[in-house]
Amino acid sequence: MKKTLFLSVLLIAMAAKTNAAIKQIRWGSSGNPLNGLTITWSNTGAADSIRWGYTTAYEQGGFKAVKRTGYASGTSFFKYVFPSPVTASSTIYYKMWDSSTNSWTTQKTFATAPPENSSNFSFCALGDCRDDLTVLAAVSNLANAKHSALTVFNGDLTYSGNVASEYDDFFTSTSAFLANNVVYHAQGNHDVGGATWFQNIFDLPQTNGSNLYYSVRYGNAIFITLNSESPSGQTTWLNTTLAAAAADPTIEWKVISFHKPFFNVGSHVGDMNSYRTTWWKAFDDYGVDLILNGHDHNYQRTKPINLKVSTSAPVAKYGSATGEGRCEIVCGGAGAGLYSVGTTADSWAMNYFNSKYNYVYCDVQGCKMVITAYTNTGTVLETFTLDKSASCTIGAPEVTERFNAISVFPNPAENNFTLHYSSEKTGDAIVKIFNSMGQEVASEKVSKTSTELEFKYDVSKYSKGIYVVSVIIDNQRDNSVLILK
Image 1 (cartoon, rainbow, N blue to C red):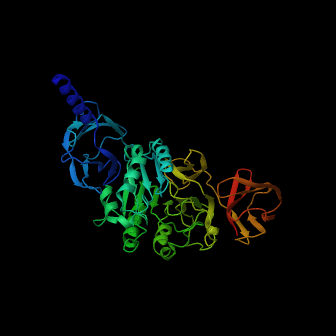
Image 2 (cartoon, rainbow, N blue to C red):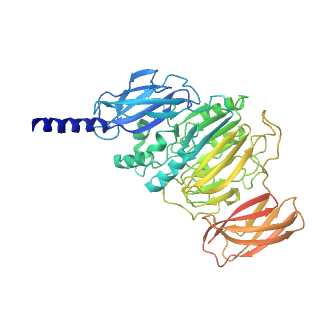
């Protein structure tokens, strides 16, 4: 009887040791994905450790993790900073000592990013995940499968910002993604409620003692994260950082992420208007290539915007050269309730709108960046290429995407609209109309015999909302946003 009791107690103790309390494993960095790499986790223990290496022998050794207070009662964060730089394009094998169960976790792995000087790498962008955990899990798992060098997350991780159960849900839904990706976060308006939590949970680069805005130099790009929830005080730093990037011949791409977009036709129109003469001016002055935002829960892409050239019409093409325009993408579709209805103030600037859950995958190929937006089911919303070959030091010049003048009037419309379109191409054109879910609701063939095309259409049978009107001639496609009231 005593022997049986002893064996039962032993088996229970062994089970407890294998049931590790370590959770919420996440990767971060005080610099780029190779320099300043960190791993952080949560546990109820007192003194966790990690052992690791580039082989299963964990030849780099064992190290005590640094402990700090967690957000949940009785739980701490444990952090380890890897020596810089870690070996690029390799696998880190590691185990963690769980001091709450006095046992080692099972072996885990992490794939490091390509070399720092690589001109071929990828990154993801997503944001606004606070409501639907099933969607968040689907979107983050799809992004995880892309094996990107880094991810920018554009804010609004939870609804309240300071509720432990909401952060628990966030970490559970993104567990596979966070355990395999270096993520650079921007603060959203819903994160502000727990601003100190946000700053404590994630290990991010710092500027002037704060991790709410910072820059990361990696590959042939610079990534700048701004804090749109408290924009004042960042403009001088932004200009200085962009000026240095513009003077660096090894930097081809300038990518900026923050929460609130400047241009959109969703529910949050005008939130950043007062910073068009400061932040956006800096974007235009130094030829920023790509701006990634959240806040509006949908997917949107602008036409090339250069406010130094025009405040009411797009320019001809994306690019960093004088007179070329910025590409802004709203990708706020990682789980927060979707938005569709908006206003027309920025409709002149918009090229594409779709009210579906989404994330964005950017594949940098030297002087080209192929950008693809996916839904939470893995369906492609759209794909396009930023091509800087004409001014880049790598590769031969190629034709870049050109935007032709297209507008609809009145906008908003009730019963009818007139489309005005101007381009050099003539011949058979197709005018298509898509609803906010990306579904084609109309397709009309018209003959374009001159530079100008005027097309009138009855939309009285369609529901109110946001639509995209496209004109397609051969391989040229131009879009305009139409709002029906």
